[in-house]
Every structure is written in C-alpha cells, then in structure tokens.
Length: 406
Ligand code: PLP
Image (cartoon, rainbow, N blue to C red; front, side, top):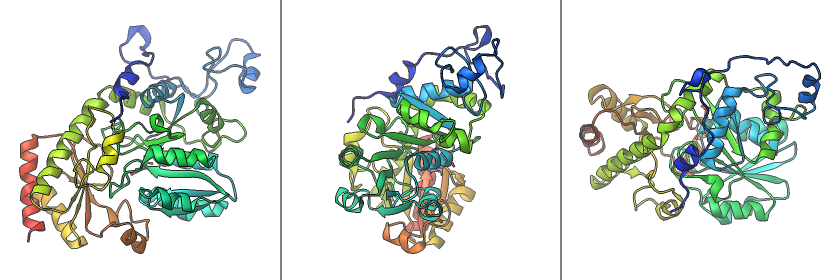
C-alpha cells in the first residue's frame, strides 16, 4: 500500500473563496478579459504576463479563472505540478497523445482500454501517421518487446475497462523512462484509489464525467502533468488544447469544484459496496471479476499500489457468458429488482449497468475482444450507493440466482 493521501493533498491546495466572502467560489463566465494598459495585451501574447505572472487573464479558451481553480485542485490531488481541464475525457486523451507524438511515431498501448480510446488509437491516429501496437499490459515482457525506435508513449488505463486488468504502474514507468518514453495513464476508474503520478506516470488523464463529478450530468476531462507539458498543450503555435480548442466551460468547472470535496467519501462507499457485492457473488460461485478479491490475478499488485482508505474501486464485472444471458440479467436487475439503471458510464450515485462488448467496447473488433478475454456476456456494474447495502445485496442475489444458476 502507498502512503500518499490524495484527500490531504487536495485540502492543501489554496482555497478559492467567492466574491463577497462566499464559501463557494464565484463563476467567472467572461469569454474575454479587459486590461487597463494597452501594452499589457502584447505582453500576454509574448508569454511575459499571464494568470500566474501578474494576474492577467486574456481569453477563456486560453485560461479561465474558474477552470484554473479546478485545475489547481486536481493537480494538488494527483501531486502533479499542473493540470489542464478539458471538455471531455476523450479530448484530454486525444490532445495528450497528439502532443506527444508526431507523424511516424509509435505508441505501445494496453489492449484493454475504453472502446473510444481504442478507436482513436487503432482507427484515427493512423490517418496522421501514428501507429499503435496493443499488448497485454500485465506482461512487462510483452510491453518491452513491442517497443521500437519510433515508440514515444506507453499508454494504459490503471484499471482496464471493462475486464479490470491492473497495470503495474511502477514497472511500466521504469520501462518507459529506461527507453526515453512517456507513460500516460488513464485513471478514470480509480481516482483517490490510485495516484499514478506518485508511482512514476508522466501524464495522468481523466474522464471527469465519471467518478470525479459523480452526478452523470456533465462531460469533462483533465490532464495532470508537469508544468512544461501543460504549457506545451497551451502553446499558441503548437498546443493541442490551445489550437483544437476542447475548452471546459466555467459553469462545468464550478459544478465539479463543488463535488470534489466529497469524492473521497463517495469513493470509499463505491468501493465498500462493490467489495460486498463481489464477495457475495464469489461465495455464490458466480463468475465475478473484482480486483479487491484475492482471486483476481493482479490482486496483490493492486494491493501494493493503492492508497490506504479508498478500497479497490467501484466497478465489478460479471461474466454471463452469452449476450442473451447478459441482457436477461440486466432486464431483471433494472425492471424487476430496481437494482440499477441500464446505461453506459460509471461513477453515478445509482448503479449503472451495461454489457460492454456491444456498448462501450463495441469499437474493439469481436476477435480482439475474444483475445483480451472480453466475453460477449460480460456485464459491467458501476456500483452506486443509493438504498441500503443489505437491500441491494438481496436484489443482486435474486437476479444472479434466477439467471446465472439457471
Ligand atoms: N476513459 C475511460 C476509462 C472511459 O470509460 C471513458 C468513457 O467512457 C473515457 C475515457 C472517455 O471519457 P468522456 O466520455 O468524458 O470523453
């Protein structure tokens, strides 16, 4: 277990109060910012003055005061020098990889990642001359073998979507740095639980749409890294966030700022309930995958990397083997037991449930899904915390008995 405490790091960030002494920060909605002295504008464009140097904001695609507060809080939480918030998780991932790679470069990626990211790497980046080799990220020998002289990045999710493979971040970081590569980690499934930058990741990306916001009412992303890397993303000539423009709206930033303080509490409860459900299913001899269970192949590895107090995450996978069984299971869970909602995404207060192969992983060709152990009947439960745990366990037990033992 790691000794890092992200919630203490989070409260160590300078607190932003609102106008008139508001305990909530104010929302700065201006698209552009005026200056008193006409010489100031050229100085900002030259980089001589800016929000961190002389307090001048320029234009909200560049920097916005409210979005910058959220970035500051996230950097504190992850223990990185800086963070830039974006309009979505996909834009955080896409801008990061485009910033690190140019035509002719190569990426070694985990084969078990969100379908949209897989499509970006496998189908879109080749149009820009960037190739990716997908490997089993749990084998450092396979990762090493895939590195070639064009490789610039090792890309992985800390907990792979949806089969919950765990990446060995310290080992991958050593491998990356020994080969002068950058390690980029998507930590969307495990905020608080894992702090990849503390274990050597160069860039940590998030879909804040999920656990970090926690209310399934907005789309948002973040890139946490060194000041130099964030500066490169915002460069006036070659910055991917600056020039592609996936800017976060300050109202979205405000909403997330207000929910960040209870992220640790929420993660603890997501994890506590996921563990109880996974244990119950395992005792019932159900085909359950959860990295908190000792039966999970990377349980010990995860145990060595987690921060104390936040459990092992809020996602469980249940292999119903066939799509028909999975759909029957989902139907009973939602429409008979009222256990959760059939929907993609995760990190909501209600349980969200989907069959991954035909939804959020559908971009991965079926043959590849088979190779990575993603069964057509795999149901992902993003465990929520509404209702009592006892009642939820009883509902899940009934549905599992009806469908999975039949
Ligand atoms: N990363 C992971 C692990 C995801 O599950 C998702 C979306 O489901 C994304 C990134 C993309 O995030 P967004 O939908 O915020 O663009």
